[in-house]
Image (cartoon, rainbow, N blue to C red; front, side, top):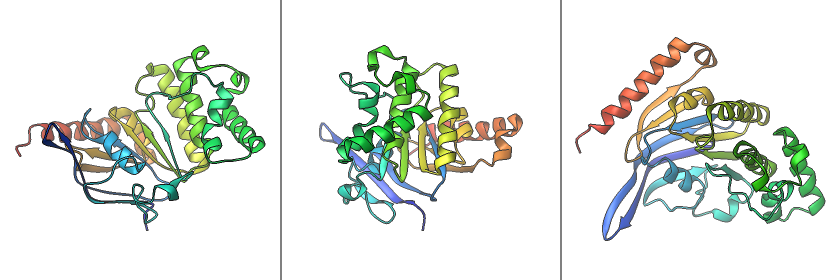
Length: 254
């Protein structure tokens, strides 16, 4: 059974007595240990899909399940099983780097000594050992995002979700973080869903790329074998196909 199953998922919002469809009949699956990138235009419903995965939004129709359970209905079951890295680091400004990295473990009621041990391990992994007593305002944007990554990994989640995690960083910093993040995913073999608007980033990170239209529904399901990542011509060909699918969707008549 796939780790994540999404069948005919639809999410409708109501704004000023008018309905707005953010997700429409979305279908996809993610296997255990797979890293899947999700790409689409800004505003196509990618982040709403992630919020359904996190159990923060209730589906209007259809079903999204992780290990056969639905995050919104079984919210407590997923405590400690899901973790997320967002576009903004969401650090607490009054807490040090170490205190921020232990925050998830604190919510899960881990003993203090174990919290500190786990957080320090992951801070070392992301290269912040010597900054554990610093506060967020003393760090660069890339360093703050590294704290967010350490915090996410420290609870040892079964599924890791990322929403435009590197989109706000300069390309040099983003590239280094992508490389480090990918190495951590490979090392831990976490099931991961990485949402991005950057097609190059999706192809670089994902073993598979899901291309969404607007509202969110599957336009393409693209396998990205390791050999493809080393072949610029092949990558350019796939990127062109993805762009064409997104542009064609933009001119689609309802």
